[in-house]
Image (cartoon, rainbow over all chains, first blue to last red; front, side, top):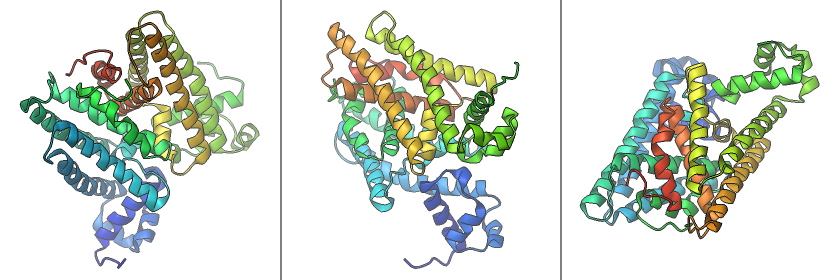
Length: 202
Length: 202
């Protein structure tokens, strides 16, 4: 792949690649610069701090992931089919990471949430906002399902929060067991959070 | 609190306290020794490596947490009551961490699973074993519920896996939002993973 001429873009790519493999705390500015092929002196021209770079990586990842979520959740079909697409998209990302790097990288947001929540307030706030947006997207789909008479949900927001929490829990298992199949096997059970289906396991 | 005479015990306590606040990668042997009041030279008398200490912290935490889980899951009462006790116990631990330190520390195992799964095989294997044991405990309770005619579950193991994944997802939210109430609010929804209750949200 050709080297991009934009140092900022290269730093973002390098940081994202390193964060997929290792914890934030273990990655230094010097290493990010080395991977990006950017002089360390130039780093601070693009970003005032490693934290600022991390926030930019988070934002860029969310722009991409949000479009994936919208593709799944705004596709034609029933609520059940659209939620299934969301689980498949989530699983596919983990399969791709396993194929590409030999290990399931998990969810960037979940990884950073557990690593940094108690020590980095700006990162925590950004991640809170993203998870709330994820819940918004699922809630919107659930409300459409309610309007279509597919499901009777009293509190679509809390139901959406359960679905997103379940998804994060499943991605944690996929990473721990290095097995994206953890997500596929359990998605039917997750549907039962909506009373949408008799889950496979019960 | 009096200082324990046993250096090994003090190192374990110091490492557990530091791990509750910060990522593993950001904590060095020198800092653990300083907090424990143990000479750095003595560290390697007790543990061959930082990883060996981490594994010992994990084992010690699981001995304690396992007894808490057994208390909840082997208490008299219905499956629903026993699962509720498990969620309350999980929530109580996060409330205690918030009261004690000002921040929700999350789950030691979940934190380390996301931080280290792709880079530390012995830690990953130990955590896999612990999560499988957690699933065993919940599965056992579900089977008792089935025997008592409280619930009709086709695959108690997968149902148990869903419950443990949901619990991890909720603890992630509790940590991210620094709010143990995230666990309380959603536990009714989690019950629906078993088809046990019409969840509060649906």
